Image 1 (cartoon, rainbow, N blue to C red):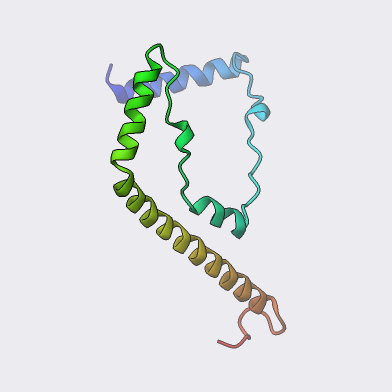
Image 2 (cartoon, rainbow, N blue to C red):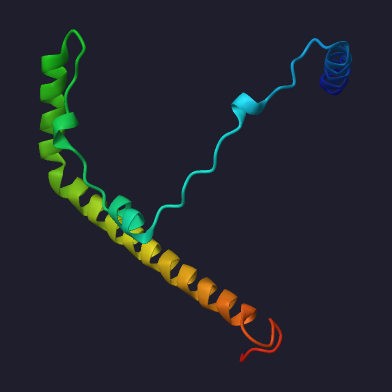
Length: 124
């Protein structure tokens, strides 16, 4: 049986089983509520990358040497990582500000189109 045929056959068997009542199609428990949209303050806070150096540890059996190796690598790469984090943070902040500006622009355009005269009669 070829893969295309197998997929079709599996779908037919599933449809037949569903018709017999083999599958409960109550999927309400899988419904995901939409998340609340984060505000500009949250976006700006999340844009800043601040690694927690206290997380540089290991809880394994040989955790102490692993922790020492991680901390040594962190110290050795501090300048490089600092530069990378600074560049990424700058980018994240610029994107967050741009998103806020676009959001404001969309709001103004929506208000203008909903204003007197309707969407086609406002100033351009």
